[in-house]
Length: 134
Image (cartoon, rainbow, N blue to C red; front, side, top):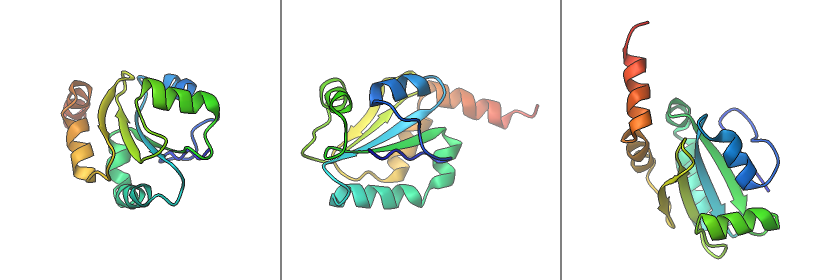
């Protein structure tokens, strides 16, 4: 199982535990694909790599998971709770509150992901704080 974050690897453990650890701290982008060679996964990863600064600015951590490598608990959580398919690519945006805010089974334009994040009330508050001089 591979996990990637902007500043290094996310700690080991099943996905549910990792999401609980990140709740209220980070937003999470989950890329779930049947395997590392999945065309949509490769396309999405390239799109995200080109926007590292925007991901970091929005407190987004990327977790990449593959059905061929995920443990049983992670698969059960992804496919049961998060409604992802092990047979197709899925991108899920998890808000800081732990809820799924966006999902797609195609490679999403990064601007669409950023627009979704930027419309969230918590992100609006963060942007206001950033604009105010301290």
